[in-house]
Structures are given as C-alpha cells and as structure tokens.
Length: 286
Ligand SMILES: [Fe+2]
Image 1 (tube, protein in one colour):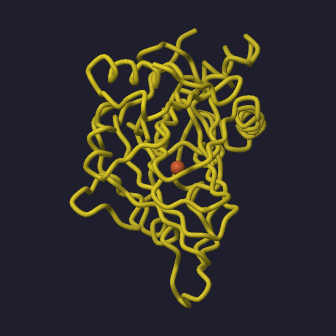
Image 2 (cartoon, protein in one colour):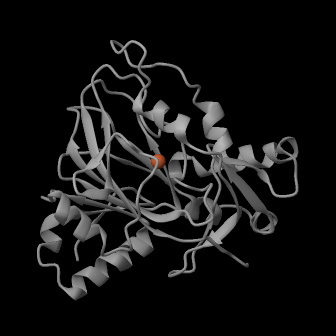
C-alpha cells in the first residue's frame, strides 16, 4: 500500500484509491499501519454514516460516546457530531489532551471524518508520546517508568469555567459547557509509561488536561516533573498538523497520541466522530 509520511517523524497519509478494494489483506495492512504509525490520514473518502461506522469497526469495537452531545447521527448512537457554528467562541479540545484518561479503560482509537470544513483554519494537531518517551535519557525513562499517574476530570472542569460563550444566544451555554456541567467527577490511576499491546512500543501516558499528580505524591511535589514532561511531549519535533477537507478520515491511537483542536476559524465546521476499543493501558517494564 502506498502512503506518504506527513512529517519527518510521525503520521502517514493514504489516498482512498489505495483502499478502494477492501479485501482481508488490505484491512490487515491498514490495521498494521495504524499500530505502527499511530496516526492515519485517509484522503478523499466518500462515506455515508453507515459506511463510516462499518469502516471504523475494522479497527475495533465501537463504543457509545457519552461526552459529546451536540447530537448523534440518526440511528447511530456511536457516531457523535462535533459542530462549531459561526459566532461560537469556544471549540472542543483546544488544549493538548488524550480523551478519557480518567477512565480505567480509555478508548484506544478515535476516528474523525470531515463533513463541513472551513475554507481556512480548524486544523488538528497531534503529538506522539512514543517519540517523546524515546527521546528521554535512560535515567529519566527509568524514573518515570517506575511511577503511576492520576488522571481526573477535576482538572478539565477547573480549566473550563462555566460561563456563556455563544454570542447572540443570550443565556445559552455552548454545547461544550453543557457537556462539562453534566460530566461527573471521574478519576483513574495508570502507569506513567505504557506499551502498545501489538508493537510493544513504550509511550508516556500523561497530559496537562487530565493528569494531576503522580500516585503517592502531592500535586505540588508532582508538578515540577509533570510540567517538564508535558512540555516535552508537546515539542514540535513530535507533532503532526492535519488540515481537514470534506472526506478526510483521521484515525489515531488515543493512548499514544495527544491531540489539540486549533481554534482559528469562524466558519461552520462539522466532523463526525467514533471511538473504539476501550482498553486498560498496559504498564511497560524496561
Ligand atoms: Fe479530544
């Protein structure tokens, strides 16, 4: 299968023509590429909702999405709509994060499909915590690898104050804020260094949006090292920036890859999202 590297380090791009005949060999190749490269961008797909669901199911069992409730595709509760209308100030996911780190079994895979895309802007940034781990010194790898981290929704709720943000809709909260208001406090403890169950590659499993501290340490004690690791993971050398078009399908490993939605547009944007394979991240023993 032909593909292009999106950067010198991370992410690959495939044309839909490469998978026009989706036989078993092609499916296995796609899955192998996803495991190996962590971020697949497939261009010029032509998927209705049923085809989107069927295609993404190749990668794992789709899960119901309870956080996004701007609506689901009719008849498909696993397909969440992510919509930003002109005039809305806030976007969803405008900070580096994994999704669902605060669950014991956070989804391993996320797929987003471009429906309605601004003429400019609205890109999504990704960063590989596998690359970030690999560039740490051996001593730092061993130190961090001996620790567990606490992920909690409490940080997200504090960082996104609940106030109205949609111009012209007096008294309304944005859909993001409505979602946050309904979100219960959740937390989970995970190893700070985990491994991909297929490739065995180690990666850092922590982010500035949901990781509050190392297990057994106070937040204050944790912050020095955590802030260093957050900044390290987010370095441009480990990043990949994806520009959307209608028909662009992006599938990434949500354990190994963090994402950041760039809020630099004031046109309508609609993406459809599914996630799959709720799995406990596996501790890596060096
Ligand atoms: Fe997200």
